[in-house]
Length: 113
Length: 113
Image (cartoon, one colour):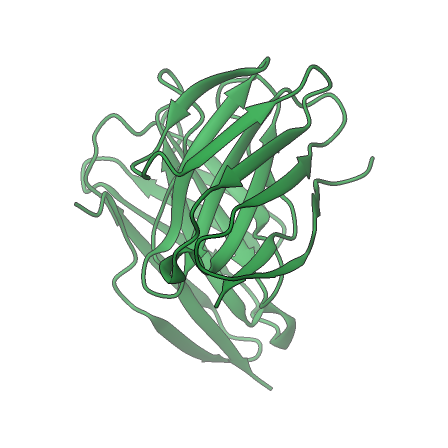
C-alpha cells in the first residue's frame, strides 16, 4: 500500500519556466510534508516543508502548496534552472507518532537550457 | 556545522556475509533513522533510534538490525547478505522537535555479489 504517490515519473521543462511537481497521499494522519532533491550518488537534500496547519510555504524559488481535502501537495519551482535537474521526492510523516518519513518514488525533473 | 557522515561510502560483499555501516549525525541531533533506496522500491524506512533506543521499525527482516551509541552515532548491521540487499543505505538525523526536517548523509552503496 503506497501511502505517498508521485504518479508522474518524469517532467521536462524549459529553463526560466515554472516546474510543478505533484504528490498525493492517502494517510489522513500525515501532518507534516517535505520535499527532497536528490542527485545521483548523493543523499537527498532537504528543500522545503509544510505543516498541515498551513496551505502554502515559500522559500525563494520554491513554493509548496498543500490541499488537505484533496490530500494533494505540489512543489512549484519558479524560475526553473538547469541546476534544478534532479530527482525530487515527496515525503510525509505523522509528527505525533514518530519521525518515520514515508516517501514517494520520486520524479525526475529535467530543465532544458 | 558538519553534515551527516556515513562510512564507508562503497562496499562490496558476497552472499552470506555480514556488513556493518556507520553513521554520525549532525552535532546536537539525537534522532537517527536509516533508509534503504533501491531502483524499484524507492526509499524504504528501516528503523529509527533516539537516545540509544529503537523507537520505530520498518518492514524488514530480522537480518537488518541497528544500534545507537551514547554520542548519537549509529550503526546498522545486515547479516547473511542476499543479492537483493544491494542498495544505497541512507542515514538521516533530526532534532527531537516535532515537524522538523531530517537531514541525510551521502549514503553507503552496498553491492552484494
